[in-house]
Amino acid sequence: MLTVGIDPHKKTHTAVIIDPSGDRLGQAVTVPDDADAVVKLREWASINASGQPVRWAIEDGRGMARRLATALAVTGESVVWVPVRLMVKARNHTGPRGKSDSLDALAVAVAAQRPDNQKYLARHTSDEPGADLAPLVDYRADLVAQRTQLISRLRWRLHQLDAGLEPASLTTLKAPHHLAQQLHTYPTGTLRDVLLANCDDLERLTTKINDLDRDLAARTHDLCPTLLTIPGVGPTVAATIIAEIGHPARIRNAAAFARLTGTAPIDVATSGTDRQRLDRGGNRRLNTAIHTVALTQARHHEQAQAIITRHQHHKGRRGAMRILKRHLTDVVYRTLTTDLTTSNNTTT
Image (cartoon, rainbow, N blue to C red):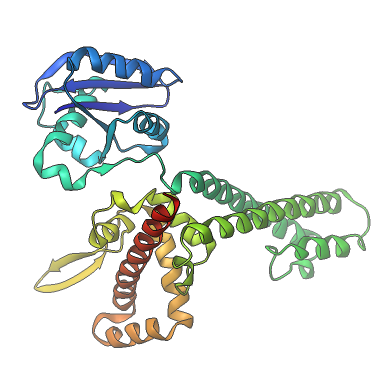
């Protein structure tokens, strides 16, 4: 089988096709990232493949190439994602030295062909459940960031007007309304008018965030109802997890999921002392989601508290939390895999 390696970018995609021995066939091609990209790539591949079967390997940059991968999958093509680290490793040992789009595409194809890399390749499907949730999760994160920035400015301006005006919380929908009522009792002035405008903006942002939360709750309940039953996993956390992984089929096992979330332990040995620490790598959004679940369970869940108590004496508080996070990663992965598999079977 021939392999097409694609180096995706925002405006263009560069492709190279190689045979099973790793030799390049024909010339590399670069196509604009538009509606005709798939047609042009398939025509180019058909000419160079001469009727032989082709597998498409794309560097794992889903923000850049999700639309391209889905369009290829819809036409019946076999599409896999190649992790960036495998591409870099192949590039360092393949072809001429240097850095270019065609060399990166060649490295993607070579990495996809190597037998040792097969277990790391994720097959792309056109029905990834996270595809619809990802933009909503991103939009909510942007709105929350805007609200946090607005609240910081609002608190400082309230302190300038009157130190006693600062409420304990400004993230509820009632808070800006009550604050505006208090501000109307102060003499008219520029600072008061700005604060009233800030209250209107804060109420608008909170309304949008609450609407998104309800939407995410409904969507995640349809996709992963069992995931939401895990203590500490709310709709936002569940939606973040689903959006970031796309589909659990691309993760080969729970250990790989732990590495992706940054909860897999790393051995640290120095001066005759052997210990472990958490991974500093991985997907930071997934890591934050697992961290949120762990903190919630550590406060309110008896089984999680028992795990911390059992390991805290030997591992310390941080070590016990690390063990709890690793345990929660397994629970989330099993539940997510079961939910989405059942959902897909029901749909088909």
